[in-house]
Length: 229
Ligand code: ADP
Image 1 (cartoon, rainbow, N blue to C red):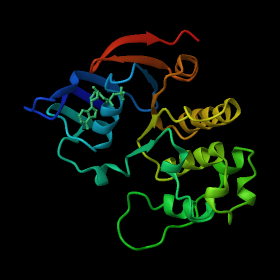
Image 2 (image 1 turned 90 degrees about the vertical axis):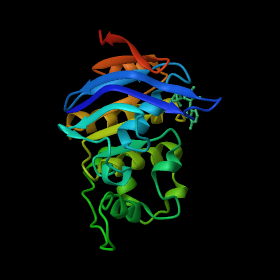
Image 3 (image 1 turned 90 degrees about the horizontal axis):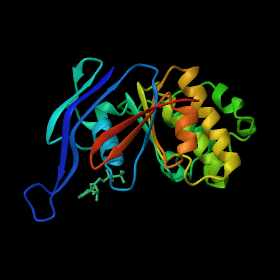
Image 4 (image 1 turned 30 degrees about the vertical axis):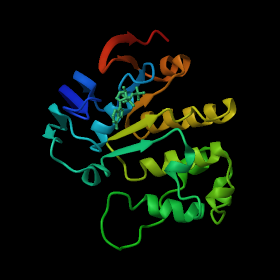
């Protein structure tokens, strides 16, 4: 489904502060995979996500999505196919809008034009057991971090993306919220069949939820730890 072939990313090319962030990286992802990515700071994990989401173009190498080259495609065209959730819940929601307005806007992601989106199904929201479905007119800024992140995750999958990228999406949450968010993440993979790549520093979470755990080091995927759980 996704194939990265010999991807190299160089920041500040030919300058004194040149940095090779990805070095001839190869990766194959199959539909429905749930892959955890671990690795120390500076290993190149975020850069890998930037390549997958089209935010940066590789210096060399090929990126295929469903057999189609993504090397020249712009990030806004990839936005419907690839969603990202970040560590900071505020980044995935519109805090000054209500839950309902967030859901309507989320269902429009990746579509151009002024046509207003439709209210999507509330099934995922109801499944959280956070009673957010009874607070549709509440402004999102009034929600807790865990509730905002749950909403961010739901918004990220409303457009039915091919891949969901999770960049340490539970790192800022308390243990209870982490459990809720990880259960929702699992459901998104298993019930909706959405392929997931998850960066985490939590090895327990990486192994418990990922079908595969890949380790990044100095711009390469150096180790493949098969899940023993
Ligand atoms: P990780 O997400 O694993 O912490 P990054 O992908 O953020 O790693 O960074 C990989 C390397 O590239 C690091 O050495 C980092 O300092 C460098 N880097 C990241 N972004 C930039 C940038 N915009 N300009 C220059 N160097 C960068």
